[in-house]
Length: 177
Image (cartoon, rainbow, N blue to C red; front, side, top):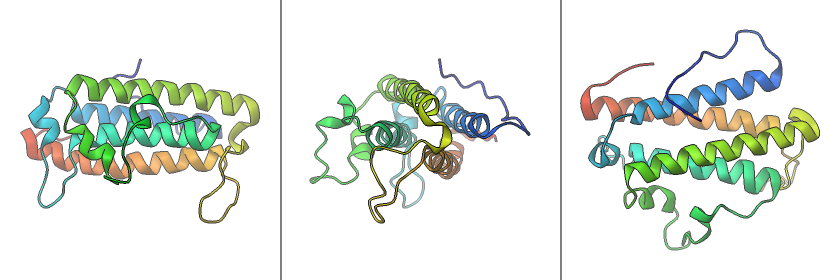
């Protein structure tokens, strides 16, 4: 089960191990940033931004389901996203987070990450890092590899964990890596 306990990625490992341990490290970093916060803490914003820690949990759960489910394997969107009215609210995953309890936000994130790990393992077994996604790049039509998707997700987490650092510090002064 995904927890807040982090292990530094190895300094020297094969490609899949390096990418998967960095993804895991960043998932756990986000969980550390939201650890112990109630609904008010998860709904806090900083400055003019509307980004919240709860929104980050929900957004990243959606991003994982989209990339590892819809794009990589051609699966239908997960049940939590299937009925979203994206036409009415392009930022639905962010705004819907405000209506969910802290426990539900954490549950969605952890459950989706676990499902993503299963999907990643299946793709690695079938074709390694060069496994080609079911969907092609929407702009170029080029194939998308599992390697590219993993790097993209590490980048997505790294960027949003920077947001999480700032928001968490503004909530209660907690800082960290």
